[in-house]
Length: 177
Image (cartoon, rainbow, N blue to C red; front, side):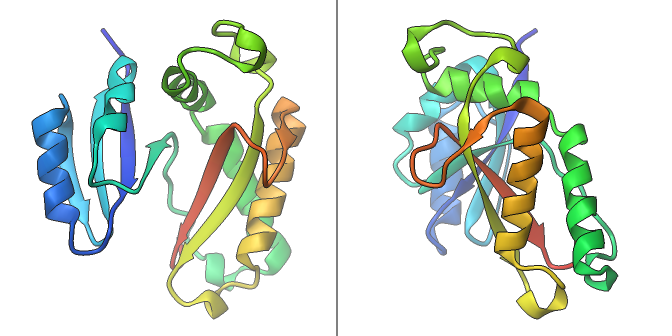
């Protein structure tokens, strides 16, 4: 059975229903749901390149981990950052790399074919997007992104570059979770 991946698409606010309809019509997508500014759905991993034909979506992200960390607003800056960094061990990095490789024609730098997760050398960047009142946290988006990226570098040895990157890891912090 083919592994499936959840995709998160950003769309122009007001076009969510249009995007959801396009996804349902053009793709063998499952569980298509929309909310303000985005559409989420599941698709077989080997079919994600079909999403490049979508016209109504702005950005497309593979969701390889989602969790709620309760009480971020009550933690000190260091406590919150450490708690965020701990989440790296729960992420499905295998799925993330496979989705990235599939979207890039199964090729890595230098034209090599699929490789094991631990010998893949990806240049990445981390972007932190926070929703809600920014003053509720003791840390900034830049603090969270830089420390999360440093931990990815420590674990996998991947290089980080904010301008020339292969993969973007988006750290979404929604209010106090």
